[in-house]
Image (cartoon, rainbow, N blue to C red):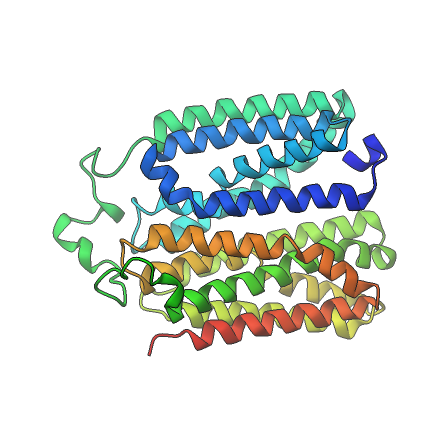
Length: 370
C-alpha cells in the first residue's frame, strides 16, 4: 500500500519494515524493566498510542524520513501488545492451565487477522489509506484503554484469588519448574537452556517468516490470486487448530521441548511437500501449506511455555522477553535473505526453510533437561 501510494522502491519500504522489527526487538528486551518502572496497563496503553501514531504516519508519509520516523513509533508500540506482553498479562492468572490460556490469547491475534484484515482493506477502499488508519488507530486506543482500566490493572492477589482458582496451599504444586532457585545475575547468557531455547525459537521463526513472505507469490502463478488467498487463510485456520490442540491437550508433565520439536517436524514435512511439488503438483502444495500452517502458532506459544517449566518463577519474566526479542531481531532479516536465495530458484526457498527448521529442532533437543 505504501509503495503504491508513494511510488518508492520496494527496497526502501522493506528497510523501514526491518527497522520496525529491530526497534521492537530492542523494546521488548526491556519490557520487564518498563513494567517495573510503571505497570503493565500503562505500558500496554502507551504501546497502543505509539502504534496508532506510527500507523497513521505510514499512511501519510511523503518523505522517506517520515516513513522511518513512523517505523520507529510503530516498532516501539506494537510489542506492548505482542507475544511477550501477552505472556506477562496471562502469567499471574494461570500456572497449570497456562498452555490453554496462552493458546486462546495468541489465537486472538490470528482470528483478528482473519476478521479485521479484510475489513481494514474495505475501509481503505471506501475512505482512503490515511482516513482508515486514523479510524483504526482511534478504535485501538479506546479499546486498549478500556481493557487496561477494567482488566489489565487487576491481579489475582488484588481480587483475593489464586492462579487457576487453586487454594493457596496448592499453588506451588501446580506446575513446578525444573529448577528451585533463580539464576545468579548475569549468568543467563551462559545457561545452556536459555541459549538453546533462544536459538531454537529464532531459527524456527526465521524459517517461518521467510517462507511465508514469499509463499503467496510462489503459489499465485499455480492457483491464481484468489485461490491462493484462500489457501493462505487455510494456513491460518491450521495454525489456530494446531495451537489450540497443543494448548488444551498437552499434559502438564510433558516434555515441552519434545512437543516443540514435533511441531517443527510437521512443518518440515510440509516444507518438503512443497519442495517435492515442484510448482506443479497442486495436491502436494495444498497438503504442504496446511501442514506448515499447523506449526505456525506453536512457534510463538511453545517457547514461553518451555521457559515456564525450565526456569525459576523469578527468571521467567526476563527470559521470555529476551527470547522474543532475539527471535524478532533475527526474523526481521528473513524476508530479505529468503529473497536473495529465491533469485537462485523457488525450490531453494523450501530447502532453506527445511534447513532452518532442522536447526531449530536440533537446538531444542540439545537443550533438554538432563
